[in-house]
Image (tube, rainbow, N blue to C red; front, side):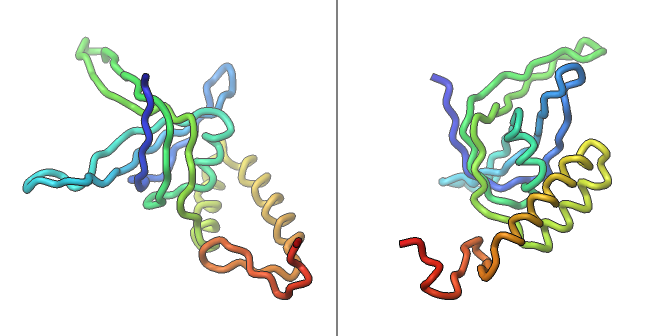
Length: 162
């Protein structure tokens, strides 16, 4: 059985790329996972490289930023290769099956992330689609207001569905 579950914070912004012939999205980032028990002189966290594929990869690239807390479920993969100088490199990465966002961005962080994505030609189309979706959501919210934890406040009891 090869099963990995990690909860940690992103150590850098995700990088989204597309496989040339198939157009499959691939997102790479790393997370720091705090150690439960520490020894003097030992690092406080372990660092893991994460790879996400498909629609999940695009979601990670659009909504995650450095420092955000996430949960990852996936499998561990060897990433061994030999470079041009015949030097062997060994590494392990986590191939994510599922990524859960445990913290959400504030509006300011979303705007900064959007501006960064606009500068990347590959993400321009995704950015435009996300803006359209955000505008539709804002129009549909009507009298609802969002608080800082992502919960929606309801103005009156008339809007409660039960």
